[in-house]
Length: 634
Image 1: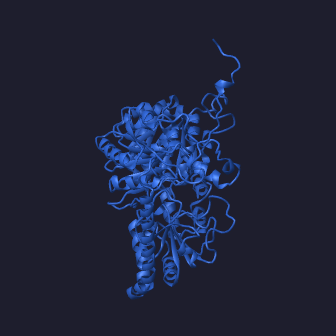
Image 2: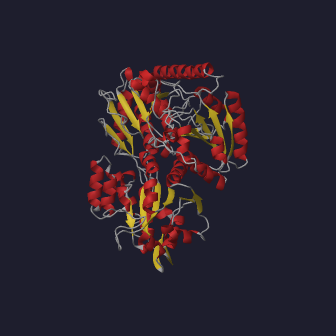
Image 3: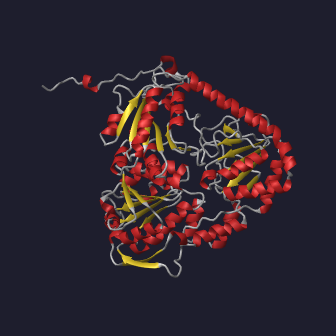
């Protein structure tokens, strides 16, 4: 899809040719034409557009504001002077500065994931672009709509061996091309507003994703340029594309006739605001709903139809799943090359969503409903009701509904028993830690996790008004959590935002505390300090090699010296405290919540128990360089 859009923008495909390609990818003709219309919307400015004269920077700032941007996430540099000079006297655009390029990208990412508005970033030329790559990877994995801009010190104007410019023979846009939908270099100041509109439109077009625009410093600084500035409504068109009626009817028949259907839901459910429709659909047919590798919890965690993460080991799959329905979900697989298929090969597969690139990527597809998830589920729900009577649906789903509820009750009872069994310890067991947070935080808190081995089963996660919202990333590139929580709070100022983060992850992004204090962004950060890279250690242990036999896990222990995270945050003006028991933690969380309600960020460092293979090991290489010196100065 990315290459097709690029080719169309660069006039390498006609409108008819582009529509034909979309049809070959599974788009209905109406859907394909609607998307082409959307792409065409901003290529020429309609009559009545505002015309502006100014520097290249003036034009960029004006178009950014007209696009509806609230926050400029940035780590600034000297080659962006034309942009920042114009920003200085523009009301309504708030600069949010971070102390590293990676963290400003994660801020914009968190802002987008909560608000579903495009996040806007400005980086510093080639070096800043490269340093942002890890977080751009996370954003690209989850389709976050980010417009990432940067200055450009052009290596094509005089010397190709230039300070803070691309290396000889290379373009700046090549640095992160694999992490963006499209990357551009821009050297014409008068064309910057059009390029920027194109960037916003491409980032937001389904499936979303980051885009990158490098702007030559001389283009930003050029004077007396004239260009049209358009409001967002005239170039960011996001219709709810619907699938063909015949395909909807066929899917409805397949599901009504299925004996053991299973749903796999993904992030397009949240992005299309389709949680209520998915609930209604699953309840009508008593469908077991499993979760894919997602950055949100896209179905209520305590709903009886929620059967947990999808795997071949799920009873609903093992018992002969005959229809698998992917709803806004990427294909299964992708972690490692499996020895055997990870999807039942005998099951019929239905796919619903806009991301055709992920449909059938690893496993076959029998029916694709290409369309907005919310609109498609409404149509499918109506189609099921039109084909099957209420009595038939009740009879068909009654036994399955009872089985789902019994399994759900047993699963939650098991979680409660595990919490009870592991409470009262010091350091705090992750089961108790999660339970304390779940009952102490606001009922609608946004809980960001950069902590793979944390325990979150006690939370009531979903997207309804009285449920907590879970947010993570699937790229697993460390350094995301603190920045993402900062952006999330800016996106949801009236909701409590809590960052739950591992001790190792904090050290990739600790400078984010400075930003929180500078702008009084009241995020509560809970650091799980187990002095370990626990996820990696568990992988080492699973290998069952020499490390297991010796109890030595190189590079895993993070003590000696111990890191004081309260002091680390305190050095940047953020107050905090430590907790080593569940009672201390609950009291600390209540104090932290009060601090955030007063407008202050706050940090709680929790001494957390390790678990899993090798948990008891504190071994680390005792190398001391100073002791190897043969000569000492007096």
